[in-house]
Image (cartoon, rainbow, N blue to C red; front, side, top):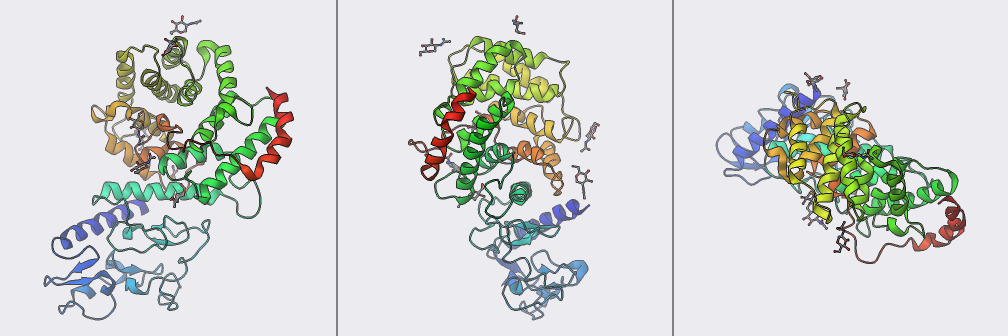
Length: 432
Ligand SMILES: *[C@@H]1O[C@H](CO)[C@@H](O)[C@H](O)[C@H]1NC(C)=O
Ligand SMILES: *[C@@H]1O[C@H](CO)[C@@H](O)[C@H](O)[C@H]1NC(C)=O
Ligand SMILES: *[C@@H]1O[C@H](CO)[C@@H](O)[C@H](O)[C@H]1NC(C)=O
Ligand SMILES: *[C@@H]1O[C@H](CO)[C@@H](O)[C@H](O)[C@H]1NC(C)=O
Ligand SMILES: *[C@@H]1O[C@H](CO)[C@@H](O)[C@H](O)[C@H]1NC(C)=O
Ligand SMILES: *[C@@H]1O[C@H](CO)[C@@H](O)[C@H](O)[C@H]1NC(C)=O
Ligand SMILES: *[C@@H]1O[C@H](CO)[C@@H](O)[C@H](O)[C@H]1NC(C)=O
């Protein structure tokens, strides 16, 4: 219900905005008499239009989306929002969320600013007026509601990761899923691992220390886990082919060879993304996985197989019959229900990712309702795993976009932590 209200508010904000923008500037309100006045004048109890139309929609039930509605319902001018002028609402909701920690929750229907430390009403995103500090919520706005909903969903999903981060001096802030978080954040925002981004630096540091720790402690890491780390290292610009002396890619390849046709296609996708030499038996394995109807999570595997095959066909000199890939994608499309989903939330996300291959979603697939099913799923209760699959889709990206192509030529070396790594080296060698 909340989501419906949110969406209709957004729709209204955009319609109203579109109408006003025929003559008025993007941060102005168009009065009934045709005059323009800044949106900050809405509901400030002064007649700025000379026909009082800027004061017309200011009661709690008709609060204009571009005015400010306190959490207690009071409708007042947006000018007082975060102006440091004291509590104008009566519940302090105009000053309470202005400079908060990134794990402090936003109220329902509000959204976290890109820089993380302020919450604003969701209807203010992409409305032409800047309300966030440091990084604006008015960037990357195309003037249609679908884009704005994606934007809202994307920010919500990103902040889910940030909320899970433990504050304080611990070296285990991001937890055991840091590999998935790294990949999802990179696909949502390719500047995450640019030099100087503190979030990226912290994740990269934790990723490497955690992996070294795992390699030295746990006798046998699962192949799935190893593959997840390789993906994360790729996006974080750390070389998995030579991870402090250990060839993680070579190790994964060894395990894949041992498994033959029973390999999880995700492992082959990872090998391919990491630039390993692909073989005809890789093609056999992914084809076999695609056809393995008896397997649990079969459709998930089909989506992963399609992505793996696409990677092999575009990135290596192994010959792949393009018709096989086309048939695979066509079959995936047939699994979509009328409400846009494919089985569950996660499968919908994975299948949509696969259908970005050659823009296959354009035919015989309802991308809009699939996206809607994913954006509707944002209600704060989503799991980290769901977010990992859905977040890339909102940026039109997939696991095929996991590469180190964005990295500078020189690999990033954890200078400050080198001696720590050297200490661990001996134990790591014991592992492989
Ligand atoms: C740093 O990375 C975070 C996480 O993806 C992203 O939200 C933010 O926009 C990045 N900041 C800059 C300045 O690029
Ligand atoms: C692996 O699967 C492919 C395709 O389904 C099949 O042609 C091949 O014989 C299988 N290989 C083995 C060793 O089972
Ligand atoms: C791929 O090409 C390289 C050289 O371009 C060659 O050495 C290699 O044998 C080829 N691999 C296959 C499987 O054809
Ligand atoms: C979509 O439809 C399928 C099949 O009718 C159903 O199982 C599923 O619960 C529906 N999903 C949503 C989100 O409505
Ligand atoms: C949030 O979504 C889950 C399914 O993903 C659903 O079960 C739950 O009822 C939703 N909660 C609210 C408050 O809408
Ligand atoms: C993501 O991957 C797809 C498929 O490989 C490719 O076509 C697309 O250009 C990539 N997008 C970006 C932004 O790199
Ligand atoms: C990052 O994404 C932006 C747009 O989202 C694009 O213009 C830019 O080329 C991308 N950079 C890289 C290195 O892929």
